[in-house]
Length: 227
Image (tube, rainbow, N blue to C red; front, side, top):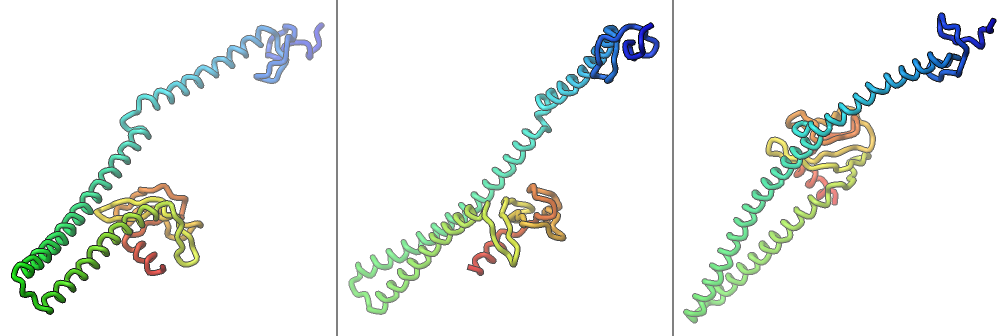
């Protein structure tokens, strides 16, 4: 009579043990080993099916998937940049036109005085003051526009100090016609929920309790005053 250790562990089976089944951790005969192996294969099939479903989801979900959302975000940012560019371009053209008119008018006045040949000292000094004023205004205009553009581009990705806390300038957004910077503190702070104060949405991915938004002009003014 066979001992219990040499008989298949499956209930009702009297066949001799063939091997240890790693699926159930029992000594079984060849028949039950094959059955268990088949069960293992049956468990793998739905796993492969799930992975194939995930693969199909990634490939077919082009309208609402992450790549589509990224494209929507890109288009929105490009539109915001175009809007700001067009606004600045219009202002620049207006200022350039204004200074060109003033310069042309002053040149015309000088030509008129030269043609008449009887310019007074007061008239000459008046024109000289006008030229100095125009020179200062044009120089300030040119340098200020360059500084604003450079300052905004340099501010992104930098760390600034406000009080005892440091903040990383992570992004610049436009919401409800307002320019905002998304800032992230170096530690969690009460009340920092990372939501836009204009619309209540999360435009920027912040660490938990560390993100908030500030008006661009306000932040620029604060940095300028501290410098």
